[in-house]
Length: 220
Image (tube, rainbow, N blue to C red; front, side, top):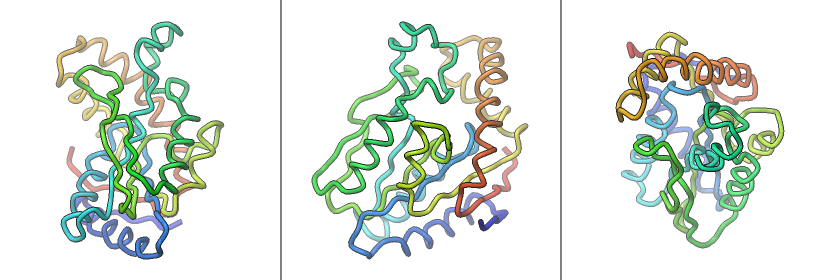
């Protein structure tokens, strides 16, 4: 396992080089960005896809694990809405199955996303074109060894673990949860301590399953 300490800009440059090296084999490949909540996975993934597609249009597609949150109505029915974000509040088996199918698909495939404006799943949030060679997948639990998540790691051709300090994550999450004004500050603080930071600690234990660990140097 390779470990590097980089700025987000340098991390993007490095990953663009590594991602480009994965392409050109004729087979669709998957680069997975794992890490706890608030470490910057989605921002890095979307910038990386934009950079790769600017150089080679249509080369890469962004595939977020968050689209496989259980729908809020289902969580309410199960009585687990307060746990939203924990591994058991995702459709983990469906995500692994979707990714496996996407890796071998030769037609356009659409997938779900997650909107923080409504705190729920959005259908057909992205579409992967037939000619796409690289899938940039990001999510908390890509490297989790517990079923059903254990089926995801074998699908990743390059597994990257992103980490930033825990206190930085706490501050970022307070800002994120408050941006849409859907919840009180107290609710957000409780959720971050009970769910998000617990997830951060859980996911930190999966870094050993990565090919590359990137510790990001960032003030916020």
